[in-house]
Image 1 (cartoon, rainbow, N blue to C red):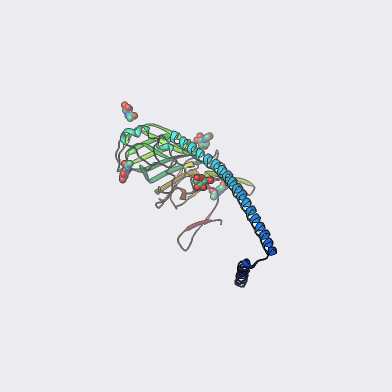
Image 2 (cartoon, protein in one colour):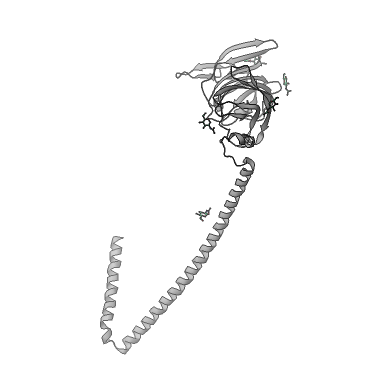
Length: 335
Ligand SMILES: *[C@@H]1O[C@H](CO)[C@@H](O)[C@H](O)[C@H]1NC(C)=O
Ligand SMILES: *[C@@H]1O[C@H](CO)[C@@H](O)[C@H](O)[C@H]1NC(C)=O
Ligand SMILES: *[C@@H]1O[C@H](CO)[C@@H](O)[C@H](O)[C@H]1NC(C)=O
Ligand SMILES: *[C@@H]1O[C@H](CO)[C@@H](O)[C@H](O)[C@H]1NC(C)=O
Ligand SMILES: *[C@@H]1O[C@H](CO)[C@@H](O)[C@H](O)[C@H]1NC(C)=O
């Protein structure tokens, strides 16, 4: 490369020298030399003119082309803008102007619809869940009773928490450790955001804890989400099992809860099932209470502080083997 450049440089200098020579001999030129010169100059001028014309045409063409490109980009851009504006209008219409997780002034709480936001409002925080599940493996339904201890961070008349495909039968709110119930004016599901909204007769006070009790029932669905069922054949016999898949946002299909990872709480789970089944969960069974009619309730010990999606349970007919790994984790494996 360097050698080539040097050569070109040398050639260039050579040309310049030639021109210098011609210029130098001009005063002593003959008629023939002049005609040759004129032809050369003419040719030179024509080629320069042609070059200019070509350049102009090229520039014009490229300008046209760029305009074209710009135009189409503008079209795309404006369509994107329009789409954005459309979405904004939709949201504005739906959300009545309030930003998410923004508690309104007292006089505007009437207009505040916290269930219309994708994220839960932040005025309540779950501390502890007591969950009692009864699994009916004969007709693949289950009933549940959840008692959530919630801390109120900002005064509000609303309780908004996740619940999806649950049929809620009863909602009660009580002030913690005080007998007085907080009257529930109304409760309703808002399916677009998979939430249950409890409207209270009075505002919950900040810095206080309340107990939220919800009784509900649901189907042990035949899909791999929430609390679902599966079956297998063993010794020529079809057996069913119910297991859970809560990650990332399917705990709400099994019990009403604050189903966002930031809400960490402790959980105490009890599972009632027929004695031909056994139940498993994150924690070991503390006690099993047998009832007449072939039913048993397993009470599991309390979990550490954790998010809802970590929770798991199963109602099955497996015999299992419990093994403790060196790090202290209990594993259930086939015998
Ligand atoms: C929209 O236009 C702006 C400037 O007008 C430009 O920076 C941007 O890249 C364009 N966007 C698209 C998607 O063409
Ligand atoms: C399922 O069975 C249980 C008891 O066997 C019963 O109480 C419940 O109503 C049944 N559910 C449906 C939807 O049939
Ligand atoms: C909500 O309560 C917290 C403390 O409990 C406070 O820092 C925050 O400012 C309150 N937010 C509103 C909007 O009142
Ligand atoms: C609360 O309940 C009382 C008595 O049932 C009723 O008179 C009052 O209007 C209710 N208040 C609200 C805000 O619902
Ligand atoms: C599984 O079900 C069969 C038939 O109902 C029963 O005989 C067996 O004891 C059950 N196994 C367990 C571990 O419950």
